[in-house]
Length: 103
Image (cartoon, rainbow, N blue to C red; front, side, top):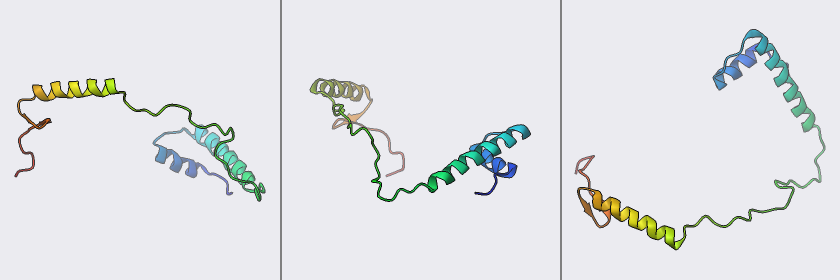
């Protein structure tokens, strides 16, 4: 990996929309260089025969599905009916409005 320059840091900072002073640019260049060096070391690790995994515990989501109860559905329907009744004009459980885009 080539050395990270202050120009590289300026480009990254511009993309991230952040500003650095000259001392901060030097520090960031060193830190980014160290991170990229570590990534290069990781690339050297022999992973042949190692099965890829995304979860090391084997645990799965044990939460219930997020589904409304019958009571919640009834409350929502009643609230929707109230809102539709409050509208100046409605039809078939929909609020009627004047045409926006023409006929």
